Length: 366
Image (cartoon, rainbow, N blue to C red; front, side, top):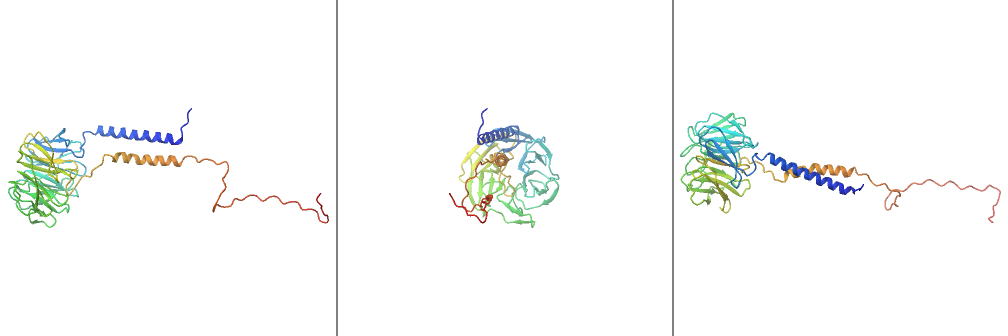
């Protein structure tokens, strides 16, 4: 029999456990291939359907609301469920993180719910394009919390977004302004943009992390700085019906889509460079986009790095390895080396006393 040094079998055990963790992680990933993944792009393509794509435009899944007709804006809650505003059915539908339909959410919609946004408390705000034009607020269970009436332009509370302060609602109303409303004090605020937007009709918008705003403005995509001043324009050849706008979780790019052609575009925020584009295959109009893990001012899903499962697996592995090393038997010394320095003295038994000679006699050595 061949005996290996203790360090060799500990290393072998470590390699075996890491391999098992890797295989288990990959197997779990394969088994959950249908689950939503960070960066997936969702397109509301009409006929009550939402198509899920990879960032490169490969179709992964088609989600069915079962209602038919035109759908619009989407958003995600903290659990990763997808919420879809169905424009024609006057409903909000909810899908689980695997794409399964969970049913409707909320009730009492007046006419044409179009956009959705969550606050940090998981209350959902729904903008309505027509009818009462009001924004409806629901709690996490779908109960109506508030009905918000605000000034509008061409249509209602068409597209909405919430600032990081949790009280300033930004919205467009198919006009030339980015409008604002103070939810806490229930009063209208001054328009955000310093000058009228250059496009014909303002649709979807996103509040940026730096306090600026990005707007789909029909013929153009417009970026405003934190003071409401126009600082950048984005566009693509032959596209004059920009409708959606969503921030990618990478913090560097954003997405938009053409309402009529059904094409989806990805732009670099700083340079304006077109990163990619593909056809979403819209049945009717491309009524809205969403990106899993997308950045929103009010609520952003945490990004989970791909290496995190490995790290979590190595923590108990390291603890077990430390336990094994501590239980390793210590070598037994056959003879103790001499102690130096401040070592405590070694106690040895006293030698037996030497015998004394008897009194009165003198012993002379030979």
